[in-house]
Length: 306
Image (cartoon, rainbow, N blue to C red; front, side):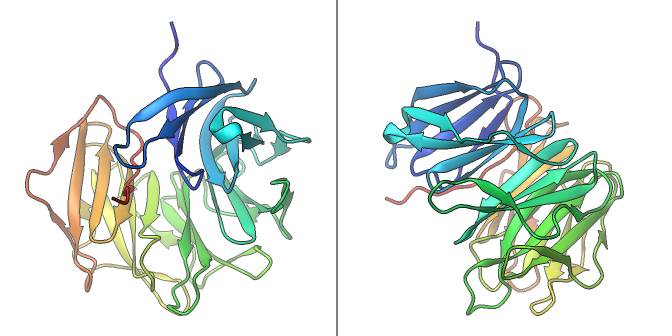
């Protein structure tokens, strides 16, 4: 009997969905029908020999954070029917990697390390996909990083990502970094920024430029904190009315346009809010919160073009 999947990952891997199983130490790849969203597969399953905790995709490659302190890298072939581990994989990371994010042209990969309290940064080879440590990596974060996101540029005439945000569960704050031209990270003025107790995730709407708001789930008080983002520096300022109430034990969130969704692990529910595009304030949509499965941990918002 197969073990239940422990994490899901999606991204710019064409129409593929990756499912991680910590119990089996495996990664399974499914195809996603672009019209119906129906899953087929698994097309292939890779045994990692490590404990996978998070995944990110970039081009025809995907990267897996291993609890043992490394990053495994794979190249996809055969329309998703095969995944080959890159030479030299796994690559060293910090202690206790828990989350990662990849983006950019050229490619960039950042890994939040929960035990060494820092972020490992890598450039990604366009052809081979091999991660190479960035200058100055790793970069100091707060204590107990739990979540990481690459945010787009605050300037409307620049389309690449320029901010990295990290929710620090133990030090109760959010680290914000600017990304230089070579991918290295520098703290923005005022970073880290205070958050509530044990922040578990941070999210922004990565499809809105200029970037305006960021949201941090606070499970200790069953709230989500909202911030405005300074358009020139990337500094965070609490929104009026923040923090906003959610369900019990919010674990993660995702935004898209005018919607924000929050997975509430303690109340087996999903809170959904409309975002005021002028103030960033959150208003529950009709029927929220919505019942979901037991102890939801991760939420991913995506759209399928018709």
